[in-house]
Amino acid sequence: MINRPEQQYLQLCQRIVDEGEWVHNQRTGINCLTVINADLDYDVGNNEFPLITTRKSFYKAAIAELLGYLRGYSSAADFRAIGCNTWNANANENQAWLNNPHRRGEDDMGRVYGVQGRAWQKPDGSTLDQLRKVINNLSKSIDDRGEIVTFYNPGEFELGCLRPCMHTHTFSLLGDRLYLTSYQRSCDVPLGLNFNQIQCFVLLALVAQITGHKPGKAYHKIVNAHIYENQLELMRDVQLTRQPFAAPSLHINPDIRSLEDIESWVSKDDFKVDGYQSHPAIKYPFAV
Image (tube, rainbow, N blue to C red; front, side):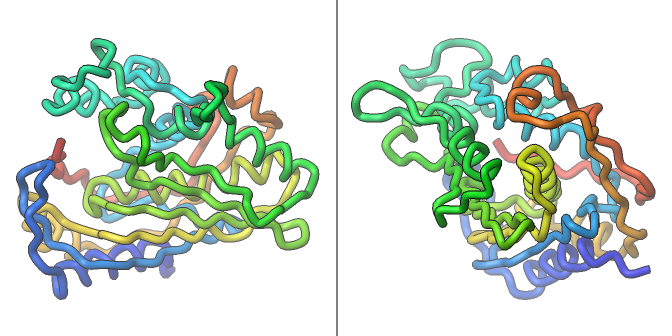
């Protein structure tokens, strides 16, 4: 059986290996093999869950991170408490952030990602909850062509530990079917992309469920897709030599019915995957 979600992932990886150009990344100090522009899509309506099978992938941490964004978390400790460790390094080991006078101590991430989505600072000192506006509109079957949640706030980059990578999510209604287009400025393909794929899929599935719509497709647009130099050998000589297994399916607790549910009691354990078979894990290095 052809695993369509993973085939497009592997095609992007092979494209970077074959066509990529070397770029020196100033933030990490590591060279990246890079291509510009990649378009992926995930058939959420047919439940083709894009969980990578050519290496073992830990989907629950990706879902936990998404839940933290939707709740507006700004502390790595809060993410750890719900089963996600991805913010520990950027909060506590990023030297530029450690030297930043706006950092408020251990585990502080600053005004990144979900903080912008749930509490965008307005000129009058009040905040705008972008996500709640979108949920409220979609629940009433309203699409004003601006059902957008963006984490990208150039005026506050210095107030956070990292500029957002996947930064903007646009929801679109066609009849009773909901679609998502997600934009990503920068993508660590071997290590980070499967997290991003999972989050695009789950975000659409979850918002469709709580607003009463059928999910359609999630479209994922990446500007700069890269493989770090210290990841290249593992990608080229190990992962790209493996044949994918069949795509698994995702099941979300049907009791999740509102944004308030997501904010209060929902956990990574409310998401189950069926039919997941994978090759062994690959320990790709992480660039801080």
